[in-house]
Length: 101
Image (tube, rainbow, N blue to C red; front, side):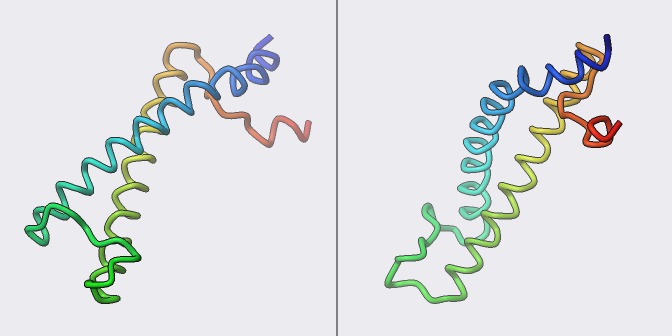
């Protein structure tokens, strides 16, 4: 029975994972805005198409934004997976090793 439950849970988890991804993106965006403001004392980070900014500043902003996004998304995904595992007793992502047997 656990095997069939394990097969079905990843499909059920997809909408939850989507919602968590959306939330993590929003949180990461807010965190980046605050980090950039603290680092550069500016309200807005440069975009790739900002003609007034140099390569170094644009690439720094992209690197900081990417790092913050990755950390926040990983933390939110891991927390969500652990919450599902605690409440159901099953890790929400299918294990490829089970498919080989």
